[in-house]
Amino acid sequence: MGERRDRMVRDMDVRHFSGRTVEAYLAGVKGLAKFYMRAPDQLSDDEVQRYLLHLREERRLSSSSCNQIRCALKFFYEVTVRRPQPSLTVPPMRQAQKLPDILSREEVGRIIAATRSLRERVLLLATYGGGLRVSEVVALRPTDLDVERAVIRVEQGKGKKDRYTVLAECLVREVTHYYTVYGRPAHWVFPQRADTTRHMDASSAQKIYTTAKRRAGIEKVGGIHSMRHAFATHSLEARRSAHPGPHARAHERHDHDALSAHHHQAGGSADLAPGPAAAHAAARVVGARAPRVARGGGGRRHLHPTCGLRGRGRRAHLRRRVPAHASHLTRPASGAACHRPLSHRAARRPCRGL
Image (cartoon, rainbow, N blue to C red; front, side):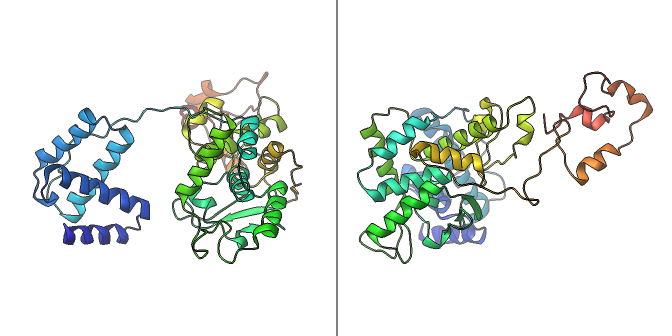
């Protein structure tokens, strides 16, 4: 499989697949070859389908694992081998929508307090205080911490995207003390002990969190990504307490990277962008004061509580002409927040701000 493997790697590199996706796809094809003890390009479509059914029914793999292996085999046969017809007629498994176990502020504080060194404490505090993924927190550079603007720059995170997140004042003090004890690193905030030119491995950060959680006596399921879930949930709760009222949801900016779909049970989406709610949520855990964030003329504008639009979009929405036969779609004048008629398109689709 040497030649086919190299060709598959080139096909994925051309399409800008991430390193972890490349590893997962190669492992999926390697598992198929190991199961039949034959080259995967010599297997028939029926044999590939039987292997997928074996993973699902006999090995009892999770739906996400089966779907990942299915995508790897589909890519191998349709892109690398270039079979004329689709070889995988087995539909993907439907994944169950489950809610994660959200850590409370008190539990997050216990986990951070259960760390055994200043390095581990700063690592978990940065993960929670900035809502970072494990791959993002281990790859932080000293220049990514902008103290003047109170933001953390995440460079080339998931999806090869840059973004900014909040930098709490308590984290600034902890990092300053961390630099005093260990010295300011030249390359990475959390370098490896053996080779300082390379950053800490993600598995090491996972072990640090698991050990601290066990020492704190917390039995909730989840890895270090639970800190990111907790950050998003606590930021949403802090934002709602700061904007009480029936139209509080209209003041939240929807960000799909902020909170995954299984948090919709809480009634909305959180915002991981730098803001006072996220800073106060992080500072409340360690008992520190959150930094003040100025809201000038260029600050965030609130959405209209009824139509969910702002600026030019709202003015264009108000100028829409409604057909004569659509008079039954008009809102009642008494007790309504907005007295303009609705078009057929607006009547079929709920307003984004409600």
